[in-house]
Length: 372
Image (cartoon, rainbow, N blue to C red; front, side, top):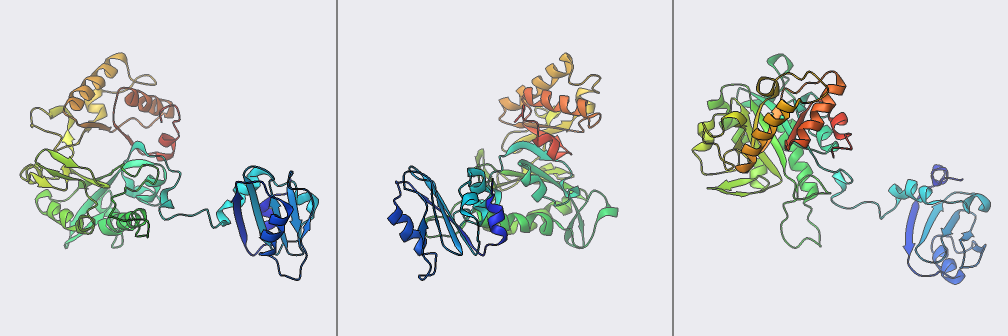
């Protein structure tokens, strides 16, 4: 079968149009003549009750007959009519990107389905933030270090560079993405707060800020760095006990000072709660919409290819306690090898109700079709 991609190799432009009524030769001639120079004759090659091809020396128009008819006009191509009649739906799909109907304002994340994945050490990825979003992760993690009033991002001091800052890797890209997802067009009559995912505009993206330097001085710098997102009203907020979701939810972790969060009843940032100490530290959803703990030290080592009955019961108990408070659950320090054990633990944690799956291999986790 001749592919439209073969046409495109010699084409200057491609246009795809749709008609929802039967076409007759006159209509085809009229439409096709608009694409061909007037002096070139259009030759109808069949009746309108069957697939119709009209051809001039530099344009081929293919119609599907009755019902929804697809027309592809390829300028500058001289293709034998017999081959052109073999056009299939896959050929139309292959050429669709060149169609004027293929794009729309919020398409940056089109076809990406959000998944309850946390991109652990996200800054290690080839394209921090973007790789996570491309795989549907709804949570990312950035380690920040404060030096000379600038927040640098990296796992340790040896990995820090002047170019990789909290603003350049996360704040500015998020602002640009959200600007794309909240366009100003004649169709938008009031401000929107769409999230990063086109397929789920109300899904927030959790941004875990893992403070590595002194919390008392670093956390105020984090809040200052968030100002561009704050100005655009893109941050999830809390007022007393009322949480108003936004496109981005900030979660302070690591050396983030709990007292600087608890002391503010109205704010646009939260705390990564201690999963095993929710009652002892009086953690509520208004303080910590998510609570975390280390898997190995809390649940124990995995000896099989998944959780034991005792381990599953313990996880389910911690999940139940957190969910009763409206708090999500995340375990970090999950086993990563062998892969069969890693995948088994992932499946068991999701089955037990864990809300965010902490992962290093995003592609593998996103590919667990029986989970998502």
